[in-house]
Image 1 (tube, rainbow, N blue to C red):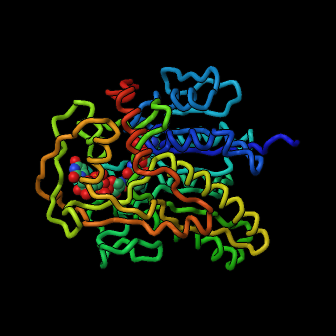
Image 2 (cartoon, rainbow, N blue to C red):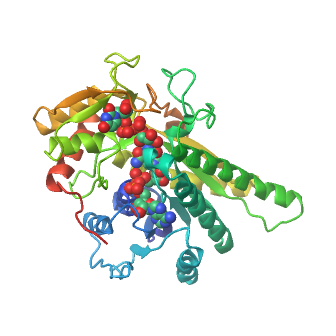
Length: 398
Ligand code: NAD
Ligand code: WQD
């Protein structure tokens, strides 16, 4: 048997919630056997909303020996150099370029997965420039450096929020549905704008070639629109570690369950849904993580086909389960997981919230062969396991 092909993936924002779980999927040998690929990862993260402790947990779960991080935010070499960390703000071009320079002599990066960004919807309305600077600025810098160093495959973390308020709120959202127009917040608009930027950038290469620039190489770009990721790694060693009061439902519910907060405030029970509370498409974070591995593989397939037809693709996929649960469904499911009643109080609606968000995830299944495998019990059991083992999250400061 020939040794697996090594592919080095640049992961921006890899210390955060979704990024860190995706690292585990990328480093999981059982994800590599069928096509003889072994991923190694280089993580860049500013630690603006995370702690590098998450990487120590990734190393632990992935059985990487001797993974260390020094006080400047640089990892030492684990024995196989499969997980590398550089504390870098992706908007800081010279610092980010130094990472590309460092790895260029060793073959550079096969692809990038771009998680880095700010994500708090409420905060984004208060400090919009910070959100535009961070989310759009980091993306532009990444694309410029990738082009310069000849890495032309990128997976981007977009969000269901780009759909805004759908005309028919009860319908499952499809990738071809309208985006952008009815977005209710600045965060969502940054995601929408980045999708537009990626589209313009993608189409520019074919145009440049038409103009006679034969060096303009095609890019392979995958936009993943996540629905509502929840849960944690089943080991209980990794999970979501929000700073301050959680904005999202399930981290809040988990903190009530563990006794850190008195009750859940349910944001409205007068929506047009069976129990009056908002419905969302919650998916297990490890299913979402696996979606990134599926996307990278799918892009490789696309790229090998593109030698035939000369076109690297831009693909958009919804990642969700296609099933919706209400706020009260979620509170009940978490009560079942932790074996006690979770107190809640009905409050007013939260401005900007939609009634129902559900994915039509069939395109991801048909094209990439990805579908969510974990159910609501898995999401809540794993969240509870994480929360009870780590009542104060990672508890580390960098
Ligand atoms: P997170 O905040 O846990 O992770 C984002 C990471 O990016 C953090 O570690 C943060 O320190 C880092 N970061 C921020 N700005 C940076 C910069 N300029 N340079 C380097 N690192 C930077 O968030 P998450 O939940 O893991 O989300 C990951 C991505 O997925 C984000 O782009 C987010 O917008 C998107 N997304 C998240 C959700 C969700 O519900 N969690 C849903 C849809 C999309
Ligand atoms: C879910 C439901 C709330 C908190 C947000 C972003 C979206 C994406 C995922 C990044 C809603 C209700 C919530 C609480 C509640 N993030 N709720 N009490 O709003 O669907 O999506 O996170 O891209 O862009 O908008 O998720 O978890 O905040 O809310 O009743 O304390 O829970 O009204 O119905 P949301 P959420």
